[in-house]
Image (cartoon, rainbow, N blue to C red; front, side, top):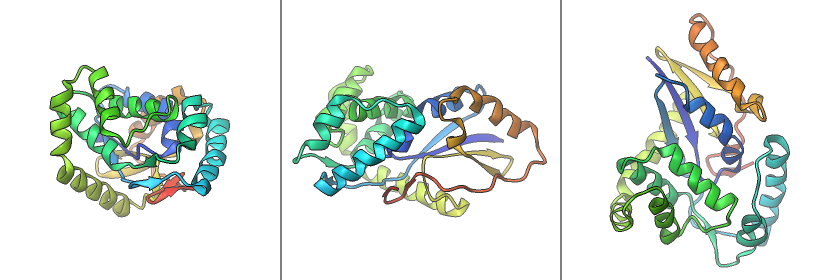
Length: 227
């Protein structure tokens, strides 16, 4: 059995940077694509120190990946002293959206755009409800399910972290191919600005059945924050 596994966090800047690569990988027909959220931040206020760290960090991401950071984010959200960063509520939103028929990667994509391009506070329920509604979901139903999803989210994050420890994955984004019980780490950095090359690369791993597992490389964001 072949499965693509994606370990991510909604607030991992490198996950946003790698989004074109991840979408290309997820588009491969007949290969299940499974997402595992890690829960990197929980209600962390945007302090001056954090703001400066993020600004420098985002410069690297933009330089390496070409992803755009909108003015609403760079000139707005990062300077909002009352805002905070929280992965957990967006993760719940992604899980609920999946239960309501929206692919997790689509919901993640919309959440990332709201955060990194529009500068919206994705740790706020109303913002997530707006995103869900824009995807055709019933707002009140989504909110009700979101409020009931705490235990499911906690179990999801726990299982994600257990899998990461089991396979030696240290952070996000981690894209890995499971092929007949063997796990192969795919180094997304090799495909920055060349997302289309990820598809033939994954197919080459599947076709080369005698290939050894790929040597693990350092991920960009750890379980506790981006580095």
